[in-house]
Image (cartoon, rainbow, N blue to C red; front, side, top):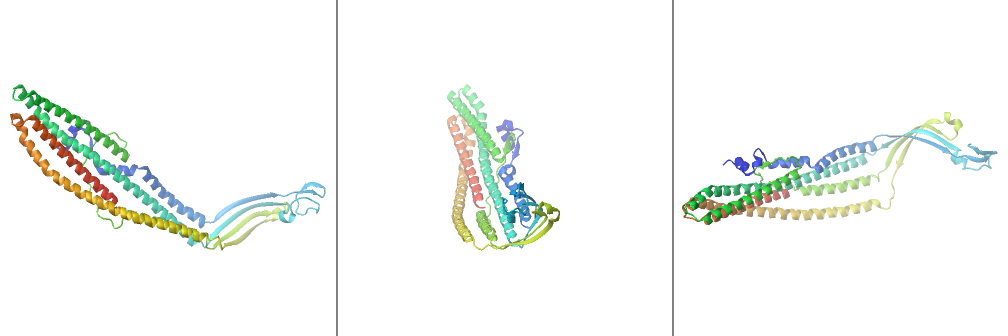
Amino acid sequence: MNRKLLLCLLFPVQLFAQQKNIDYFVNEGLKNNPNIAEINNLQQYFQIQNEFITAQNKKPQVSFTADYLFAPFFFDNGRPVSITPNPSPKAYGYDAGLTNGGLYAAQLNVAIPLFNAASVKRLYEQNKIQSDISAYSRNQIGHDLKKAITDQYIVTYQFQQQTGYLQKIIDQLQSRKPLVEALVKNGLLQQNDFLLLDIQLIANRNDLTQLQFAYNNGLALLKNLSLVSDTANYILEKPGIFEMTDPAAYNYVQKFKLDSLNLVAQQNVFNSKYKPQVSLLGSTGLNAADIRNVPHNVGLSAAVHLSIPISDGKQRKLYQRQNAVLQANQQLYLNSTALQQQNNIRNAKQQISQWKQTIEMAKEPIQKQELLLDIIKDKVIKGQVTVMDYINALQEYAILQKNKAIAETNLLLYINQYNYYNW
């Protein structure tokens, strides 16, 4: 019988169901996952951060400032309050040499950083590494999601396969039921033979319903992992999963490199503040202490600002010591992960080999059981074999097929696990 037609008979509501393969669910999951979408958006953030670094460290910083200082004198030459740069000796107020009686300023200021190319380069490098770490996280999330979806697909496909095997047995029982019933009526078989056949048929149909429930639930979980929102029923294609070749370098090594480079970049940015800082300053506008001279106090100024750090309490060395501790922790992570990676890969390979052997061992008993069924299925009608013997043979066949399906499922699960670690 055509496989698709058989599945449609098993799942009547899926008569027009689409066939879906594992790539469909994986691609949908990667496309719809919000964490991956968030990290993709963060890549734009890091691009903008580069522009921010340029604007902050290489572009002129322009500002407008305005000041008004009110510093009055009291009891100056008989006046209760006065604003003057030349108060009488008996007046009360701030020292005129410091305040000039007030300040009137409105200026346009410009500051241009100079000779900071090395510091800016360090900031760019740090931003690039953080962008790479974000991209690594995206790949790791995608890798984890792919394994979860693949595992669920394999398990759901197993329910579909077991349903097919059980339906074949039900079909055989159903085809023998009218013949056994006729023989009972003619007194060639006992009434209990028909009841045994009918009881077994009912039990198998109940088992089939439970398998259909398991398949539907598995498909719902698969859709949930992939964030597929439709309610359509699918027929799953056989998962094509094969062992991946060994990579040139394992992915966890890349994580260690990125984390180490990030510590180095942070150290370099921190060290940049110990370089001499040079800025060109300029301003133009109004700057007056006497309101009567405001029209003549419009001008401009220019200056060069130099800052050379001398001592900060050995913060630089302390920061280096902190990073050394973090680097040591990173090395511990690398060593332990390398050991776990080797163990996980070796265990997965061992399980793959064992389940392959189990599948091979299951083939011969199934073939012989099928041969046995072909021999006795007609003999039961002739009374040469009891109905109970026939039912027992069918049950044994169902168990063998179920065990083979479980073995095939476990093989695919361990291949998927091997591919997950061998990355």
